[in-house]
Image 1 (cartoon, rainbow, N blue to C red):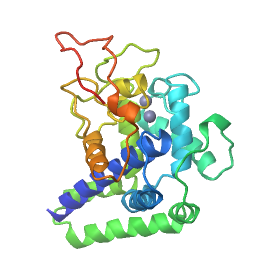
Image 2 (cartoon, helix red, strand yellow; image 1 turned 30 degrees about the vertical axis):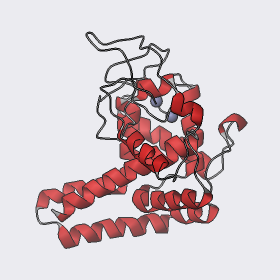
Image 3 (cartoon, rainbow, N blue to C red; image 1 turned 60 degrees about the vertical axis):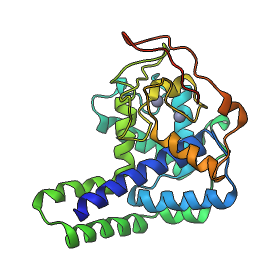
Length: 265
Ligand SMILES: [Zn+2]
Ligand SMILES: [Zn+2]
């Protein structure tokens, strides 16, 4: 039970930090928050992503490239150019490291406007720090695993961030339905995205990249947006007024028998 709980908390915490902090806040600036809260969520991202922490600036550059070049040869992770999710994620990792280590200069339009905390980002990306998290995960399993099969879950903790990235970037541009016709291959994989807290609404998100609610139709549910709404009520974050009034455009690629959209962002 302890192992299952630990796995679930690590999965949900890590995916929340990725979609809420790195993606929607860091890369897209869909909402605002004060510096103190930004630091709080930056620290939370470090603690939850642990051994597979992603630098917000490098993440944002790669992600902005993904939107600009979606499913073309310049996309950092278009599944149609790779045979497996592993080869795709390896190529993404190599490109990510160039930006994270500042060996590669991005196009200026993809840089800037990201949360930066140089001391924490340096500490988080040291090998000694990553290995300390790995040791902590192993220690937890050594103390609490009661069945042999539980150990099969352990390696997932080491690479939690890339596991979520692989699911979203592979499935979200390969499997599922489309609400909007577009030049790319983006798909909505799950109508209720319980796996990655809304990230699997890739087709909706590529259609309107600044909408904080990734769910476009009344029967779609984006769990992270529900958390954002709650945080906005608590005045932790501020959603821009034009975004609060935004309505999703009519669907142009409707699945058979589906209802018209009526959900506001
Ligand atoms: Zn995408
Ligand atoms: Zn995005």
